[in-house]
Image (cartoon, rainbow, N blue to C red; front, top):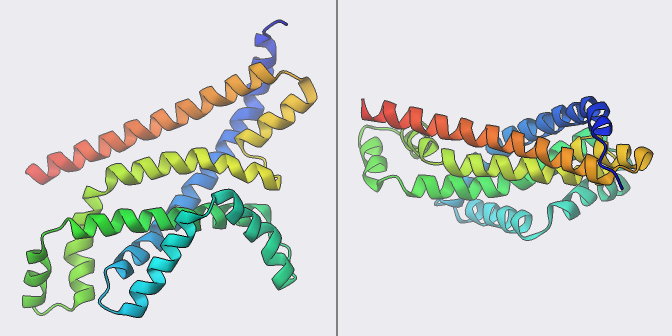
Length: 221
């Protein structure tokens, strides 16, 4: 068995196209996850029991079940109920985004609870409502503290996005599978896929470290 660099060279453009799709899925999913997670995280510490209970059910369900199963439910099970076929792209974003939201909710909850309680009391003493204090004072401070775990979630979601290949969506992993099916170059292609994932995750790690350092410097001014 020989290692073919020519196969890697000819496959890289196709793999990079798949990597671009992977990044697109990840960015859109994490944006959806942050949107859902922020509200769910605030709901987790709400004084309203029914709101707190609903948020807890959401977080426990989506953290306690595999992402792969959730993608199957969205792509295969929901059409049975609705009678409407779901586009693979929408299913991929919805599955990854809703799953990420459950983890982001816990990240925001921990970040909010790390803020001194005196901040809430100070806001309320100025005549702000609970929501106003949360939105203008607590959440902005918490957001800076959750940058590292949010970065870790971004990286985890980038790698987990490979699961959408099971519904035929042609992201990086699926592109690799299709190339291997045609060329039988499993070693070369999977090694190339691994290197591309590594480059993307290291880039995100460096970006998160930069943002964390930048905001830490701003806090000292």
